Amino acid sequence: MQTLIACLCLLILSFVSPCLCGMWIVGTENRTYNVIDYGAHGDGKSDDSEAFVSAWNATCGAEEASTLLIPPNGKFLVKVINFRGPCNATSVNIQLQGRIVAPAMDEWPRGLTNNEITNLIVISNVSSLSINGSGGSIDGYGSSWWQCTNCYRPTILRFRYCSDLTVFNLNITNSPKAHIRVNGCENATFSNITIHSPGDSPNTDGFDIYTSKNILIQNSTIACGDDCIAISGGSSYINATGIACGPGHGISIGSLGRNQAYDTVEEVYVKNCSFTNTENGARIKTVPGGSGYARNITFENITLTQARNPIIIDQYYDRKYLTNASVKVSDVTFSRFNGTSEKELAITLNCSSSGCFNIALDHINIVSAQPEKPVSCFCNNAHGTATSTEE
Ligand SMILES: *[C@@H]1O[C@H](CO)[C@@H](O)[C@H](O)[C@H]1NC(C)=O
Ligand SMILES: *[C@@H]1O[C@H](CO)[C@@H](O)[C@H](O)[C@H]1NC(C)=O
Ligand SMILES: *[C@@H]1O[C@H](CO)[C@@H](O)[C@H](O)[C@H]1NC(C)=O
Ligand SMILES: *[C@@H]1O[C@H](CO)[C@@H](O)[C@H](O)[C@H]1NC(C)=O
Ligand SMILES: *[C@@H]1O[C@H](CO)[C@@H](O)[C@H](O)[C@H]1NC(C)=O
Ligand SMILES: *[C@@H]1O[C@H](CO)[C@@H](O)[C@H](O)[C@H]1NC(C)=O
Ligand SMILES: *[C@@H]1O[C@H](CO)[C@@H](O)[C@H](O)[C@H]1NC(C)=O
Ligand SMILES: *[C@@H]1O[C@H](CO)[C@@H](O)[C@H](O)[C@H]1NC(C)=O
Ligand SMILES: *[C@@H]1O[C@H](CO)[C@@H](O)[C@H](O)[C@H]1NC(C)=O
Ligand SMILES: *[C@@H]1O[C@H](CO)[C@@H](O)[C@H](O)[C@H]1NC(C)=O
Ligand SMILES: *[C@@H]1O[C@H](CO)[C@@H](O)[C@H](O)[C@H]1NC(C)=O
Ligand SMILES: *[C@@H]1O[C@H](CO)[C@@H](O)[C@H](O)[C@H]1NC(C)=O
Image 1 (cartoon, rainbow, N blue to C red):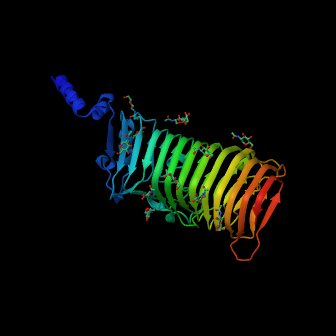
Image 2 (spheres, rainbow, N blue to C red):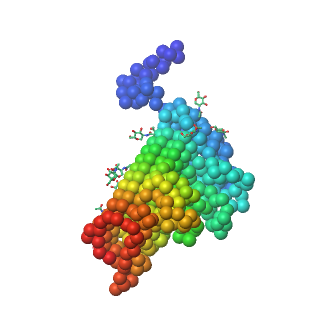
Image 3 (cartoon, rainbow, N blue to C red):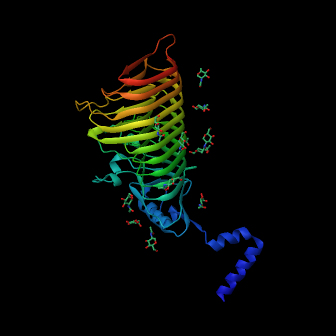
């Protein structure tokens, strides 16, 4: 009897709405799991971590597409949460409409030394995940940590081993350390991300990308106390487009080769970005004693406003080992840079004794931020070309 009714319904539906019926027949559902239904309080005081993880587990375990909802109007205090995959759900969506806040340093869970659990939100081994941060925000309460520069400080949002990831309209502020870390990921797009921390907050990178491939960060505003974007070892095909960086330390490749590591970075495209009151602009930094390479890197159409070190290759970063060994830097293009340098020294190409090769400077128009002052360039072991370059 029930079967008959179901059949009738289907028949009627297919008559009224073939589209809806099609969806029904292939069984596509998109269930929403609201953290409130899993016990979250959203009062800014109760620890909602467990409710978030329970709701995540349900979302991740769903059979079809599913959505985790963090509803508006709530202020959700979470401590250390792990959203683990792989998921049964074919695609997972996180709607962040409320505010997530981290505890103060004193209330952070103690005795956790493992990397994985000392960050605020860790999402691992998930594919086909999208995060829509419209209306919501994440605040890391970094001010309670920044004076403790030697503490092991957490990252706010970390992605590990994710593929087919899309994050957009996310507002993330005041991380104790890096705001967003991405490692072991492939095919990720971050759009319209707003990152905000004071220019003097220590080590608060905007994005830290390493061992990842095909990552795009676009149309985002990053103000922080360290690199707006740092691209480290094991990364390739990383694009940053339409980034307004400042304050901060610019967009950096590296540091590479730290502790005599073998590091590689290749195929990086940074374009249509601005650096405003930043410590650096376009930077490549390698540590003596390392090996590997940084190659096929392009910085293009960059606007500078009172940037210090607008263009810098520094192969003597954090000099600890007295050795000639170094990460090889080659095939680097700096093209269409326009604007003002805070210091007289606008371009530094300080390569290791083995040299940097095929470094191209093209249409570089950098003037001093102080009227009438000249700017200069320092080159050491750099080989390449400079065209239409005026300073
Ligand atoms: C969520 O699932 C993980 C396994 O993926 C499990 O270890 C954890 O206990 C679950 N947590 C909750 C609150 O259900
Ligand atoms: C996925 O489905 C299997 C089989 O039903 C189940 O054993 C497993 O716990 C589910 N995984 C998650 C993350 O819920
Ligand atoms: C599921 O629903 C959410 C919220 O409405 C939406 O953002 C998401 O794109 C949907 N996912 C699929 C696969 O339709
Ligand atoms: C997560 O992915 C990594 C890298 O592929 C793998 O080593 C690890 O076993 C995965 N973890 C789970 C729980 O699937
Ligand atoms: C960017 O994200 C913010 C929320 O962080 C949102 O208010 C704004 O509308 C988004 N802009 C675009 C162009 O989507
Ligand atoms: C980001 O969120 C913070 C609160 O966490 C808020 O003060 C700020 O106005 C938000 N910025 C944007 C661009 O929405
Ligand atoms: C990443 O995208 C490329 C191109 O669409 C695809 O070939 C590759 O399989 C994807 N990688 C993963 C891990 O999904
Ligand atoms: C990165 O930029 C390059 C050069 O503009 C382009 O060919 C490539 O498709 C872009 N990749 C992504 C993931 O946006
Ligand atoms: C990013 O900004 C560019 C230029 O303003 C625009 O063409 C593009 O549609 C934007 N992309 C997204 C995903 O917002
Ligand atoms: C150069 O970058 C700026 C953003 O800094 C953008 O508005 C402009 O459209 C870009 N120009 C070209 C030719 O892409
Ligand atoms: C890297 O740059 C070299 C020199 O410009 C070029 O020959 C090579 O094709 C580039 N590699 C890729 C994968 O684009
Ligand atoms: C460079 O800046 C000058 C002065 O602001 C402006 O007139 C010119 O159009 C800019 N060129 C580019 C390529 O952005």
